[in-house]
Image (tube, rainbow, N blue to C red; front, side):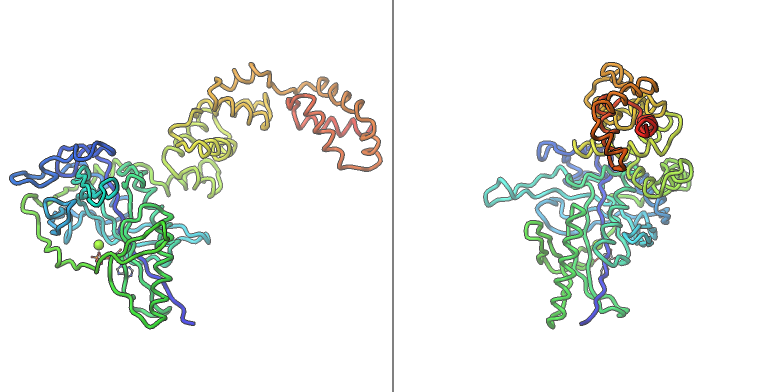
Length: 479
Ligand code: ADP
Ligand code: MG
């Protein structure tokens, strides 16, 4: 049996979160009436002149800085010529020989706890094409050109990835980064972040790469993983059966879980790239790059490290709480409002709050419980007004919009009983009502301790302080 190694390089298209198109003032808003947001410039009608949207240069520079890449002081837009119904002007404007970002890197964390650095060859600016719609047209295709001219940053990795899992880890890391930077909304369903996966296999130990196939337009992490897994199998089976992989473009069919040949691989010379005569070279001076650097937010890795060092969180907790900028901000707002207890805050944000958000399919930004409200609840655990268990009920009421924690506690009479004589009274009642269990317990059936605790909590409607119940009960049961 031959051992095979997989080689993968990803080309990721991130839609830049500008209000208007890359070379025109038309809106980029998603979901508008078809063909209502493509202007003469997006369509390349005769006589128009494209003008670069300054924002895209700033966003690309921010991205380059965040991955320790070189930012080109001079980059050039070229025309990539091809015919397709969704590209009425007959060419796409894209950067080719001189991209704005080169030679970056991204660290990814792997499942076994190790990490690995993946090279980013380049990231270049380009415009998106329109969209062909095949449903609802009965044998015809509809063309929606709203997407034409939407700014994209195409991020090309080195062939450094060695498994579908690594490819997904890289893609997720990149997704997190562009959303953190605020340069992409990351919405994969709307096509704001999509991936072409280049896959090849070679015998283990072979220094030369095998022939690759490129799987186009994968728009979910799951599809990327499945498409690559399928493609690896297909190529190995093909070679082991005496065949050869041909360089081609393939499409993934999620319903069948397989990739299918779409067309032979085109070469760069098929596109007859040449510098777009309508656009000047993009020149960025040091001042522009410095301003982009100054506008960088705290990056996920840095935030994670700070959460570990500053709040004493575990690496795992810190990673979860820095998944998104909004979640990290929320967490920090809870700690600040409570004035400490970072671990308690982490438990609640990652626990009950996240569970409710997941259940409702809501984002932290839409949380009906504000950071201040959650801190208000945690303050009452902290000062022992309520137990952690009762707090879960209060949280549910907070979520339902029944007011602040203090109001809910007062209204529902949930205040914890910490008065020793009151708890003793309940214990005496429980013992008096359960003589048989008492006798068994005293005869050595220790397990019954839990039964008594349960009865006391039940009789006190969960309000007796659990620690005091334990202590006092131990005393009383001894007799
Ligand atoms: P093209 O110009 O045809 O798109 P590139 O050289 O720009 O080709 O590479 C595109 C992507 O394919 C890059 O992400 C690169 O890492 C990856 N790639 C190149 N060769 C291979 C290979 N043999 N196996 C897997 N991926 C590859
Ligand atoms: Mg390419």
